[in-house]
Length: 419
View 1 (cartoon, rainbow, N blue to C red):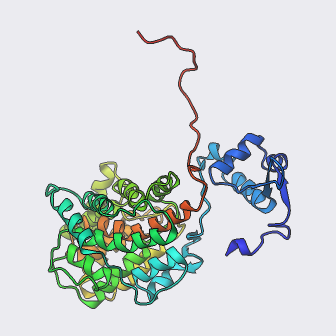
View 2 (cartoon, rainbow, N blue to C red):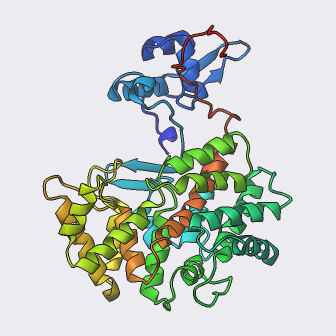
View 3 (cartoon, helix red, strand yellow):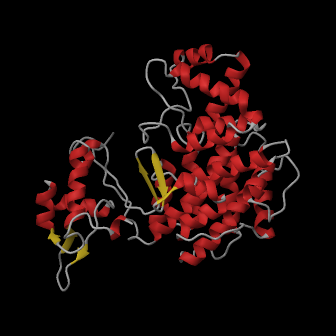
């Protein structure tokens, strides 16, 4: 949307030479081309010439960002920026393709939100299904894992098995990748060991996922909360796992491999596993009856309190706010909600801290009889749709552009050969 609405009267018309762009940015011409290679700046070849030109408005915007970040990208730690039209985070709100994500997810299912993210179009009533052969192969691969395998282990193995079953996986055309996405996500869910009897493959994906996470029968309110959680977690700009997906897609890895790259990163305790840490903290507070001793022990051990604060939101995480509103209407969630509020109030006694989506997800999983690993599963399944959206976007860019330059800090050559 922003590209259609010029920031300056000459935006999209006046083009700068490399020398002019370098002067405006206060860098060397080589640095301007480094910005292009890293996706921070767009360029256009001069008709009939050998040089490149740059959009004046875009160069000015980059110069402002560099000044705001305290200097050059390398100095400020913001070495890589990627232009994307998928998710915008602004203030305490976030948007999917320009549409308020909280409002969109309140009215549409996870599958419908995923279609919007992929295509910019809504498909009311869409349901993702997977071919039996793909599901059978993925289940056999997952069943071969040891019992202590984690949810991300299972999902990663299922993705690899699904890839091996798809001879068309190397077709990176948009239609082919969309076809892969609509099959891969339900395959990942179906490959997980069921706790309840399997749902039908035409059931909403949230219902099928529920049977993998909880031994309790699902009521309408709980299913709605799970579906809303999936939709709110579909994408969140360039999180670490999403960047890994874009690097893989930049090298033209197929969609299954790109998703596998995201799954490899999401397992970190600072990313997808954070919801599980919040879940365990919540259970401990419920067991002890107060957050004070639990928070004190976490701080004494030098650990941060999971489920609080988010570097992208100065105030409350809008995803948490939306989920808490749903959970307040679920009587079974009342104890876990009270424990979450106790954690927030205790930890924020001196410094204002807001709950993030990990704490809201912990309340959902703890109150629905799910294990602590359920939050990681929900996060990974949800984010797979966002990863596909980013892979599609990256397939439309120049190959191998996600190649930052290393700043060598070792001894200067020539050094003597080691003995």
